[in-house]
Image 1 (tube, rainbow, N blue to C red):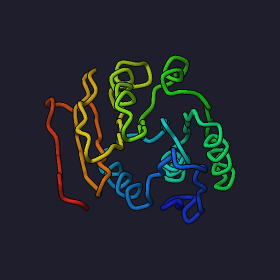
Image 2: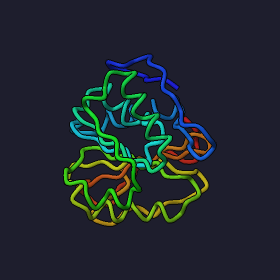
Image 3: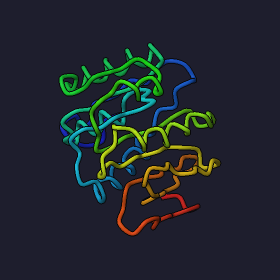
Image 4: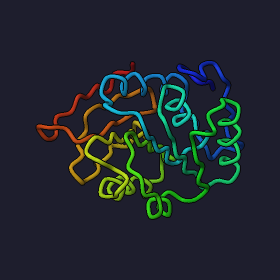
Length: 195
């Protein structure tokens, strides 16, 4: 696993030990950022929920985000995120919160331009966080939610005025991007074809 583009391009990233964390592959991460480059208006602040190795937030920092917050409840994964930030020299632009996502939603106060949500694939309750997130102070009208989930799970999108603006399938992984878009619920879908 490596940083794909930007100031930290080529740096190898560690993955947390054990089988509970499923790092986003370089291929899928690259595809996510290709999508974001076409639709994201701002990249200033990003939030990486269920951060695992921190690869998504680190990729955003490498590509020009000014700040990233990482939320991960596994202490081993939190240590890996900090090591990855140090190795890529991006630690001064980030904070790591070793806590549950639900608890984190209660104490973070800033709004974010991009929020990555990559919970365990088969933890259905984790996706309920989307609606809580959409109605929280962490989002503003330009926020994009990037949700990574199993291709076998059809998500109900978040409430709060968000609509599906892109959805792509990459094997067993589907990436759904939600935003507030004029005109309601237009969706650009590309299923089930792999890219």
